[in-house]
Image 1: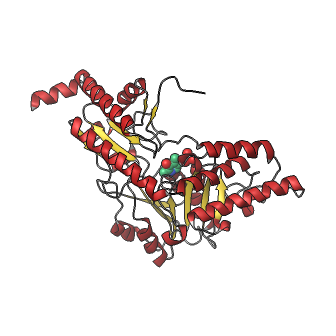
Image 2: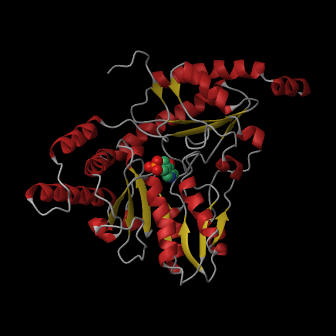
Image 3: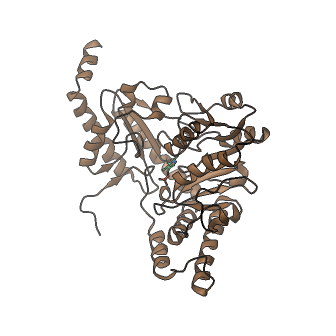
Length: 395
Ligand SMILES: *Cc1c(COP(=O)(O)O)cnc(C)c1O
């Protein structure tokens, strides 16, 4: 298959193209390793061996024990399991959970579900750059607090949270700490042991792997209710015949991602900063979103005043540029992003947001083309906007 129109893909936070080596690995597994990993004969044992090799590979990439890796059906499942599974298994100890206002819906909605079932949840605010304050974490802790869940890096504005510091606070108080690291795994160097969290979520399709497979790392000794009840797979904690091709694909994608990570990161960061400075130099009436320092290497997020993010996306698409406004899961709805609102942006500005997320393959030519199109489109949309005219008259 070849693309007739060159596509400029700048939405790597929504999903990533699969790495060719991952596709090859999965095709091999699907064609040859068809056994059920729970069967005793050789074909099953072969599947089991590949499953355990994949687990060891993930453990090595993230510095945890192989037995601390639990494969799941996606990142959302890992998040749901961490929050609900921990709450259900530890409700005798307390019913209070601390999280933040800027989590992914895969954390926020399980928390809302738990609130309807006798739990109390504190949603921590963030500052105007998206950072959680350690003081707020400390002040939110009660005698009944059993779990703190704070995302490693935000999927919309790219802000990286002080996870090791929060984990330290949690540990001192004997509280379990989970982090949704779906945006960070494969993009940031992650050492599960050194980070000090008890649970960590990840998803393969965010780092060059397949969709529909993820993992939850669970520190040895953490009490967790099974998410899926049934067979004895995943040490009886997650029933269901394993998605072997997906799991092998996840492990391979992670191996590739962590290889020469700091060099790739430096390259993406340089491109990101070039894109930010080009937008700032060429387009007026904009607002940079997120934290300039504590930021994912590939994330650019701006609000363009007087225009709608959705119109901007459609016009970019006509020009072959894939981008996002808010998060992929919520676009289509007209509500402004809960993340931008938590950063203190007024509704009318939050509506005009654009997220561009790069990869190590993004080129300077792609960025130059994107900025020139963006400049044109923003100008054209503003000329059609009645609020833009009004504001010009006021000035
Ligand atoms: C993408 C994403 C998820 C959900 O992962 P899926 O595998 O798509 O279910 C959860 N949290 C964050 C921060 C994400 O970016």
